[in-house]
Each structure stands twice: as C-alpha cells, then as structure tokens.
Length: 413
Image 1 (tube, helix red, strand yellow):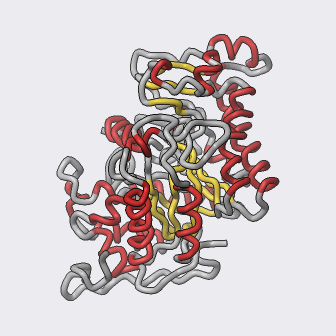
Image 2 (image 1 turned 30 degrees about the vertical axis):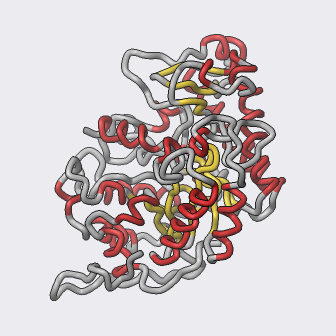
C-alpha cells in the first residue's frame, strides 16, 4: 500500500472528536442502529508510513517528537472508539524496527539505514496494547523503492547485493515475485518482526505484482524460463507465485507465533462479470486476478487467510464499481468460509473536492456501514487512513462514530 500511488491509480482506472461534536443525524431522521454482533467487530484504521503519508509527519524529527506523534494517533483511535491499528512497518523493503535483514526506513531519519534511536514498531505494539488496541503489522512484500536507481539504496541493501532479484517497472523498483529465493527472503524479513513482537496480525496490502503501466512490461522473462515449466501461460505461473507467498506466509506466521492472524487488503474488484461469470457486476479498469495476479477470491474460499479487507473505495451508486454491488458480492464470497470479511473504507475521499458529489456528503460513509449491517458476513470496517481519522475534514468520521460506534467493541477473535 504505498497507498498514495495506489489511490491515484484506482481513480484513474475507474475513471479528538466525540459523537456529540457535530455528528448528529439530520433533524427528524432516525439514527442508524449501532451494530451488535457476537464475536466482536473490526473497527480499524490504517496508519501509513510510506512517503510519510500519515506518520511521522516528516522525516528527521527527534525521537521524542516521532514517539509523541505516534501515541497521538493511537489516542485518536481510542477516542473514535476504534479497536485496531494497522501499522505500516515495512513500506519499501526497509524496516521500522531493528531488523537484521533490511535497513532502517528513510521515512524515519531521512536517510535509509539511519538509526532513529528508538524502536517504532516495538513501541507501537506496546502502546497500542496498553490502550486496549490490537496492532496489526502491515508489510508490503515486493516494493523496493519509489524510484529506479539502485545506487540510491544504502550500500548494504539486499537489492544491491542481489541485483538479479530486482525489476525496474513504472518508475519504481520491485523484487521479482517469480524467484523462489526472493519469496523466501521477504518472508524471512517480515517474520523477523513476528518473532520479536506480540503483533496481533500480519497484514498485506494490495501490491503483489505491480499495477499495470501502459506501454510497459514487467521483465520476468528469465525467471519464467527458469521456473515457469508446467504452467499453461505466464499469467498462471504468476498467480501461482502469489498463491505460494500467501500460503507459505500463513503457515509461517502460525508456526512463529500461534494465535497471530494473517490478513490481506486487496483492490476491491476480483474480476468483472464481463470477464468471468463469477465476477462482480462492475466495469473496473483493474482486476486483481488478471492484473495483479492475485486470486483473492480463491484465498477466501480455500481458507488460506484469516481475514480479507477488500478496498471498496467507491460511493454507493458509482457506475463502474458500485459500493453496494461489491459489498454484496464479497459477502457471498465469504459466506460459509473460515475467512473473516471486513470492508476497507475510503475516509480519505470524504470532502475531497476532486471526488464525486456523494463524497461531499458527511453521511456517505455512515450509509456504507448501515448497508453492511444487512450482510452478516461483514464483521467490521477499516478506515483509510489515520491522518483523516484525526483531521476529519467534513465530519464524516464523527458521523460514523455517532451512528455506529456509540459503545466500545472488541475486535473479532
């Protein structure tokens, strides 16, 4: 999720407050009933660190200032009656903890490999738990850098020591998912955090193979020639590479720290019905199965993951990808599976003048949660992202709290 670029791509592809603080329902309107379900409810927020999106506010701040900003986000989550923070601990093949595998993130000090003088992930886990919050460690498996110059990476970076692991594509550097040694390495790097800290879950975002870039191809010819035998085509081989990453990570998380869950937050459209009769009634320009080689529907149906958070970042009635249609479609997919279904919500769009008119209405997001109440498969929601939860530009989050989060709730177990 370097979600900045993903957000922009998705748009192009598809064309300290309390409930009393300005969040009352319209006069005469009945407030939506608060959700009550056995087994808990996910009320999450993503806290993005890539490009200093949510935290730290800028690189190079003193350690005490960084820590204070982090704790402030956790305190805001508590005030909003959220119960889970999804903390981006590995945004670009780097680390927000003292990792023996990868360098300290440049988003802390401004220099990749620079020791910030404290342990952000360890602190996030400790401080979240002290507040009754779950802390899910969010990793991006394959993104190496938001540029294409390996020389800008710290000299000890694994991508510089193993240049054959890296593919330049779309203005960025990526590890090649088709190499077994890469798959093993990124798991080792991510699982180090699970060894060290009592995280409540391991969380992947929507980046597997990168989003398509017009006029460019992802150069994995050599890897396909070496490892693609037995597959009908390159697409099937790529999907198998991602399937293996997901299955192996799930098994290793359980082995390292039993009870820690594994979840994935993919782009919200698996396939359009025009491509596959099993798909949703959408006309999305991106389909995870075909473009990111991530068969997210299969992972749910086979129970390979503990939870799925599809990013349903469109308003109710949006022509190309209607929130209501996708909500119902994912509910059917999750029905009778062992995978918990939560919904990724686009709080960042609320009040953005560049967004459709529906997003200028503070009640749009609350309507999403009201609609989800009719689908028992939906066990909660995760909001993108922490900066917007704090700022709440037009009061959309306050409206959600007033309408749906009047009482605390525990996360699903």
